Length: 152
Ligand code: ASC
Image 1 (cartoon, helix red, strand yellow):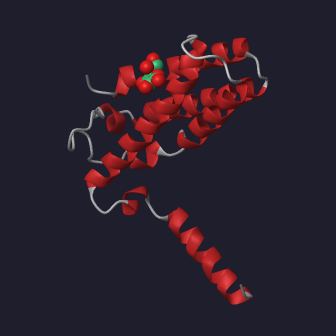
Image 2 (cartoon, helix red, strand yellow):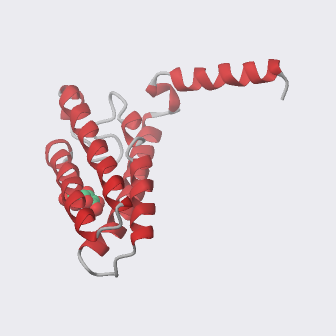
């Protein structure tokens, strides 16, 4: 790639990242679908670690680490989808409190991301006990936010 193209693509990449969240979705329903899809896949990968923690499947240190890393990446994604005005849109369970108590919601999201990052560190020690401890904290972080910000 020549330098001009390189400069153009770097500029474009910067623009995409800098776009306001709402502009990344054509309609509100798309934002709802996006955040729910990410949460769905996250829950699946959390569940694979949970199965090991609960002894339903044998502990596989490499698989636990891989799943924790996937969850860590996914944990960064859903929040751009909580676009203003998408409470109760479609079949979403997002509480209106997400927007009326946005700072508290953002703090809860950050807390979850931090606990998931610690789960990755724990998984890389190849110790099921460490994974169990960190997993419990991740579960608490998930539950805490759901209790406060997800409609029944
Ligand atoms: C999961 C999942 C959640 C959380 C929560 C923890 O695997 O889908 O919503 O963990 O159940 O209490």
